[in-house]
Image 1 (cartoon, rainbow, N blue to C red):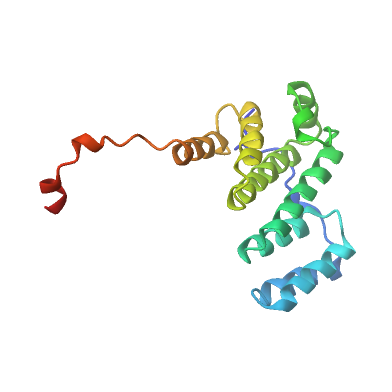
Image 2 (image 1 turned 30 degrees about the horizontal axis):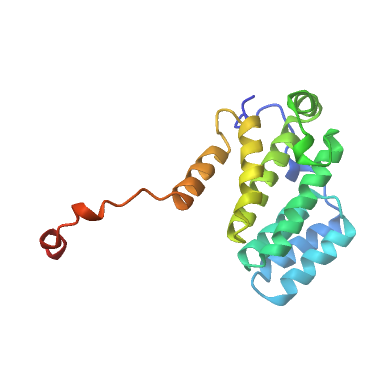
Length: 180
């Protein structure tokens, strides 16, 4: 499955927003970095609690404000909503090739959104230093994205580099070269 093929699929941000929610999203963008931005986003979320555009706005707000626990909750909420609409199991550990194929036939764009939300949750978990949890999700994501179009395999490589740094040969250290 080509996760970078955007032809012939509806994308999450194409879903219509209630006018008041759209206005609140615009006000949140105008007030970025200010306390009222969050209030606008939360009000928009109350008006359209299942709208993925609003959830993406909330995720980005919390992520860039370094409110990582809040960002993680929003990423997981987005995964839950997308899974429900796709007929996927609510627990990402239970997703298999068969359920992915059914989800892809239902809405390839929404499936891609689900996988990207899953990767976003991994990034937040890494920032929270919950490496084991992030690794489990990334390993699962790699099984879905065998061509690594979402970059999950690369993130696993980075984790491995930090957790298992190359050994340093202390006998090969030459102080004369270090001073040069």
